[in-house]
Length: 179
Image (cartoon, rainbow, N blue to C red; front, top):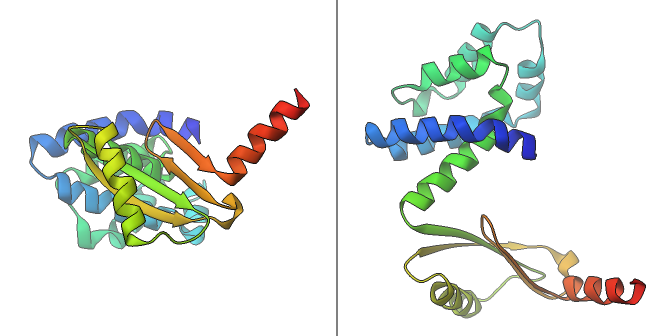
């Protein structure tokens, strides 16, 4: 995973710079999201990994599947990725691009994972606490449910994890007992 992020970051930065220069951030975001979803399909992964399929053919196939969200410069990106065998990095490029976009907009994307679905007032309370902690930034909250957390919640942003879960507390207790 870290390797894909390392590969994706320079491409995402280049796309981000181009998107800013051409004022096409939303178009690039839409394209990268579509390309990421296409390249995570198991059948497409097999095609992209197949050395018998030429880079040109791979570009044509992806171009056909993403033609509804094209933007200026896509062909150059696709050709470069295909030439270097990095088309499978498109999901990571999309993620890195969205991170750069959020940073440029002074936005923080946060995922709150809990053992059970959170009520709207609970989400608002957590969001207000996050706004206090990260003053000056717009907070975008996504929620997820993971019953293995047992109880509590976990808040993840790009570089921070706040673990207030029962599973996390039990892990810390187990760790201290075995130390």
